[in-house]
Image (cartoon, rainbow, N blue to C red; front, top):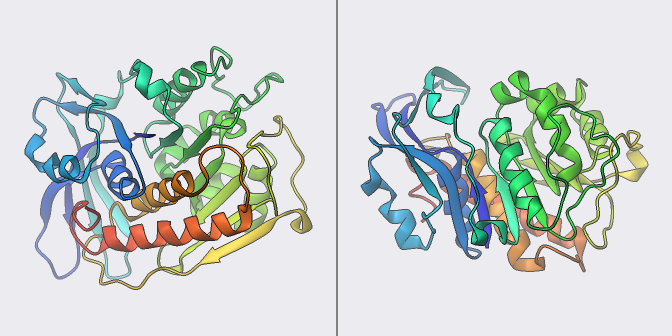
Length: 323
């Protein structure tokens, strides 16, 4: 099972030449909708008393386990975004107060999930959930907030962990994200997020620097230009290097690339979240969380699955193109 953490929001989206629409959104829903075609998925998030639960029925019918959605007495998260003709997004407003106190205790089945997909949300919540999830494998009791882990060994022990973020979280809580890198299998980031996180203008150099901090793969989401994955040419069991590794040389890094799948985009929001869900879902279905027998071929397959999921998400409003 994949445990998908993320936001569950009520979105208001404006796109050129179309009337504004409002509906279910959030990183948890898009990622779960994309991953469920590959296997079992449980969502983990928080919803307010005002959330239109009926809008989640298609996800439940598709097989997504919604039992991980925790109720809150606070109003649901709301996000209002406006896209221009070039696909650039402006956040008009964002009410994320419901996230401030959200630190869920994981159930036994959630701790036992084979893979953890940390979808875009507050990095402090990502850190909390990752710490609880790793505790099931007798990992260290907590993950520091800063970039130094004090020499602690990365405790994945064959478990698959993927993390995605958003630019505003990368800017606001960069130190927390850096502290999580040694515990990740896959890091997803846009080109700009890579530059901010690694403090390097070149996305290629940024990816190499971040690889040296622990992830097995760094996946650059490039929108209409597709996606690239940076990683080591081969891999055995998923045992991560320690923190503070030197930046890898170009000859030490292999790059995989996939083009964006052509589609008529009605709503770009959620496409990146769906990419992550499709990628992680395909990885777990093809190879499981442990030993990788054909790592280069697996990465290519997962990139394509992510690109297909992203295109499906963009082809319709909300997550309906995925289920």
